[in-house]
Image 1 (tube, one colour):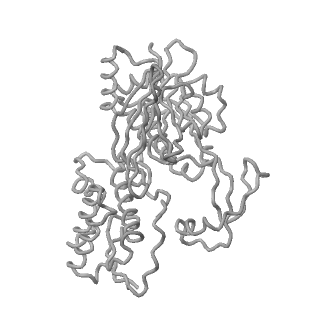
Image 2 (cartoon, rainbow, N blue to C red; image 1 turned 30 degrees about the horizontal axis):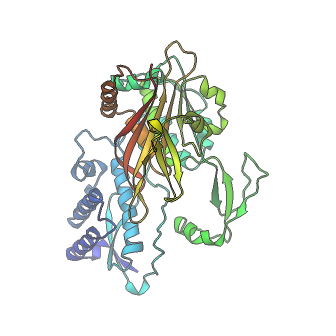
Length: 438
């Protein structure tokens, strides 16, 4: 039994808000605390019906009057992150809270609920595992891009992308056009290859996968059941199976692909989006291409990054993936390590841009690779960086200071990104390396 907002007085609600704001769970999340305070105050004042995405963007997150939810998903991302923080707060840190604050899914309205202490369930283990992202990826104006959201759970929709799509050209900032080079040449179709790691998918039934029907599913071990039930609360089956899967890309790669498609569409370029497993290597080498993935989960990216200075490396001591940069003269490599909080959530990570340009008279294609150390938002951060005139101008000035009057023929850019609940908060330039000058 619970007592909801309408039956609680103002003092009770403010005390619940104070208790949440002073928690360890929200201690380092100033923006989320600001958002929580704003929506709760609006509810306490009886103005929750006025909570809209525009209003939250302007009054809680400091966005300008030109905020557009079509191009900017920051409100939805922040609300999703806050919802997860609250769920963790009351499941792990403060399960006995007399009044809990909930964010109703599908709205921006908070709800205060008073728990009956006699019916409180035992708290779950401290490892509150992540649920799949519930908030939509940023929506863009072209309807075909909306379909990308389905790629998170499977690649069956890829059949809809097998044909090239050419959109009317719109304005592209000159520095972005310069950095992308021949990829924005309207004469050539760009192939976007989305890597998907080989993995095991948990299902409540034994099913034959179409790419290898003879490959058996495996009964899931009993130890995985408590975690699965926390992710799928209505699971009522008696058996779980682990089924081999090659059709599920990472969310950060999918989000990065939407950014690339938006840019190509704005330039009026034709593109074709395909899962890497159906793209022959020879096809990638012969045309303009954009790759998403990391070397240990993508053969195409492994080949593209084979001899580059920046590499993804597994650190056995940290049990984590780090990025290393080879140094001249036999010096030890420089190591870029992701940062985690006390709950082992990534709060800082890296994205990597690798560019191999082509000359206009070269018959071979140019390639851009967007990589991030999964399951972070690194690939999305890398793609966001590569369409930002501000960030690209910064890199351009650094290259000029090193004597490069033009963009090099091949180079890498390392991007540092701050995260919250695996969602991108901010990004910045970290380092770069020139592989080959023109």
